[in-house]
Length: 494
Ligand code: MN
Image (cartoon, rainbow, N blue to C red):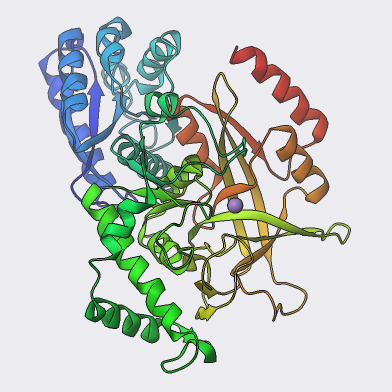
């Protein structure tokens, strides 16, 4: 359950049917909202905002929703016939997520009782079509959920949208801090930060690594002692990392960086950040452990200055809050070719979130052959088997494109005793041959935001709210069909 936020419920009707009808509509709406809130299926509280019967009432409700920070979206429902011209002005102004709940108060037709009065009062089948027409005519994206409001499936679909709407609201107030720039010469991690703020909401700022070094200098030995004790309680220390052993000092330096990073991000109000192994002047080591732990706390992270993935990791984490599974920054690293079982070993130099393991991570220190710094500390583990989704957003020059690939994380065929980093082994759907080809044809990144917690519906809702292109690679994907979709989208988004 998310705190301090709401979704508003607005019922459409008109005064044609007289005062008794208005009273009944209001009572039914109140009962529906009560039912939704007590279902236990919804992560956000629904607040009934009354029945609207005119253009000015609609405009007032939508404008109030725009201006209320607690409101992350509106659910509309037409109890009776609500002539849709009255929705135009409100919809023109409204800029938050919209869900059209196509339901009706009664579940079944009262066969022996039904008369014209009943039909005129309970005509969502009719009124919701009129409403849907104007939203489509105005080319506004919204989610349409069909079914009785007491149905678990309906409630779950509303819940999914609520999580996405909450993450969307979070992104509208997201600061992404970049320490250093993008890795030189890399194309896919770069992009238009101005367009990102206009389209996706978040703001990206640059900081020289010296700004973090200044924080690091204020970290005390007792701050470090306390954090190292926390590490000792949570992780299995490698022999060389234990107190008194050769690399324990590196663990302490990692703790110093973590404390500095957390304080810096806290002071800036940042929700996501990037690092770059090329810009570490004044730091002892590439922050690995710190990035891993901060990700698990909900900070978005992207390596090598990858601010788009950092923001997406944060957004997926917010959507998944309280759900089983986990979310992490990830990178396609190495292939295992083995026919239909061909898989991709996912990892990064250091930065994989411990949210995606059910085991106890090992805290280890090893040399890193890149960046020219001292040996960094990191958590080492293998991600658990299960279905997940890898997602990315790329800048195609004239638009942002979201690509998602359903994947199946599998157990490695054997242990990886010499691999000094966290990893996951997965098979992209429908298989490596098609999945990787489609991803590459779409221009997908080597970095992804990975999650076990979410389904494709979350990404559909997100892309609709953001108004960006969505390409899904799953068990139904064929290269032929995918190429066709790419071509059609080139025309659609021209
Ligand atoms: Mn990378």
